[in-house]
Amino acid sequence: MAELPVILRVAHFSPNVPAVDVFLKTPGAADATSNRALQNVTFPNDSGFLNVAAGRYDASVALAGSLDGVLNLNGAELARGTSTSVFAIGLLGGTGTQALQLKAFADDRTPVAGKAKLRVIHLSPDAPAVDVVVLNGGAIAARPVTNLSHSNATATALSLDPGTYTLAVVPAGASTPCCRPAPASR
Image (cartoon, rainbow, N blue to C red; front, side, top):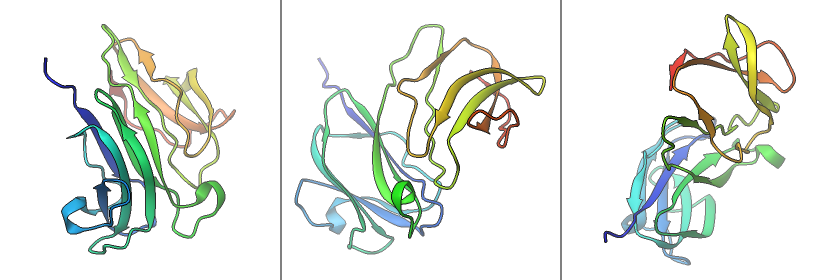
């Protein structure tokens, strides 16, 4: 039986931070060119889903070309068969919930027969809590996500029937969309 991989995705979602390098290393190891996993990652890009060996890791982020990590996530346990996304979020010079940080989210990538799964994560550091709504002819038809604040995610993925949905973001409790993407088929 083949060993299940560990799936890891790393993303730069901090809008006012320049390009960065990402290091993935054994706990306590220094940042070095040998453990640089990604180079010159710019906002808002990600690594895609990568296969890595199971184990305990330290992750750090440094300005591109530097070996001096400025953000660290130490002792992350990546178990076989799991999927994890690690995002650099917040603002350079931010404080409180807007502080620059690395945050990990467990991903559920298990398919559900006849359904599409949608995970919602609020990563806009200067936006208030939001609702994600389904629009029908410009009117709100459903509000599947409510009061989601920065750096938080839905507890589980939304399970959607196949179809075309127009989703929008509104400030929590509001009725006028502030962000309206193109319709998406799921």
